[in-house]
Length: 123
Image (cartoon, rainbow, N blue to C red; front, side, top):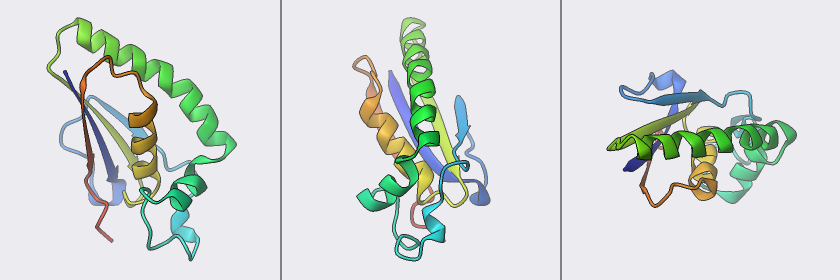
């Protein structure tokens, strides 16, 4: 099975195809920090700003078991692919950092992982 993770920005419209869509606009936004505004969630300082806080910690604590369960169930039902979309305002900071962290911590049961940052280079 292929597990697709897609980060995106709500201001650029929702993704066309998704099995699960999560909104992470509740996380601290690096866009409002002058030194981080031009960066992306792929950069450690930007990811740390968005993810190293109580809200993010609780989010991952709650979400990780659910996503592991959904991947396992999808494998057992012989699905060919699963698409998980994570959105923030512009699709450059928070959603990117969340996708990267989820991809690193989930138990994908040997599934193929595909990461797409749809709006990473948009303004």
